[in-house]
Image (cartoon, rainbow over all chains, first blue to last red; front, side):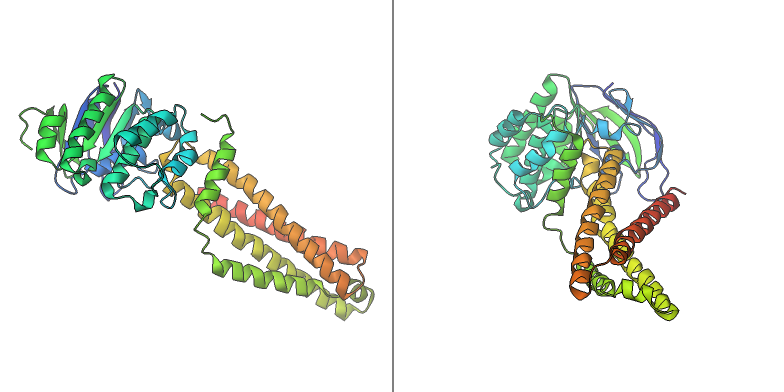
Length: 218
Length: 171
């Protein structure tokens, strides 16, 4: 089991999740759908933010993330507007020189190849990138440290339709080796139906349904 | 993968983080004023006063305490802006997303604090000795006075302040 949410209930009053239970095996893409404020991004925050207060367990590859947050960051690739972990005033290359070395399995070659594939210059200043470019950069960064779990939050919304097709091809390549999984949120109905293996529907902080993507009514 | 110590990595990271964020003009102004007053106070002819009447000794005592308080104020304000404040922001903005633990950052911060205090104390001490040397003859009493006022008392007060602050946070 790559990702497991077991009876996860938030204890803070604001944006709390309620009794979330699901598992995700390696080699699959799971989409999270729901209206704004349903709890999709909050669910990501429960994984990423060590200060989140909740009962229950979140495990990645069988390890409880609460007890090993900094080690688990080696295993997670976050692609999101919320990811403030980059230096906005520095270029993509300068960012990886500073940040990449913290990761156990960091590979520069993977980063440069991915950037080239996505047609994005490594000399571009991160703070001057468009939303779509920022997500491309974050994707290349995530790929370079070889995470087991990719968390992608509304990334494709900022991409042009042509590149979006290539982006999903790239995601398919990532999961093809069955060593990684992808959990992503999206508002694009067609994308959820056609590109995901499973879809979880969220409402008011609850995961009300998890189904195979084919034929699901979003 | 570079085979460097995590602490060195955080150090480089911290410097990069601080670039473009030096906005503590107010802090620097206060530190500058305090440093000026401390140097001014240290210019009192300590040995002459000690050798003279009791009234002058009382004045010296107030000068002594006031100067040391200013010294502690310098350390504490710099601790807040550069070590504590920036360190916390560094973790919540950046480090929580990468594989570095908060403990690593705390160890780094503590070492950084001691290095920082040693540097500032060294500069203050050198300046005060210089001022004392030019204003009046430099005696052993001046050196003792400067050492206690510019280093020992402010340092101990700062350490006490940080320790009490950490204890309150834990409670």
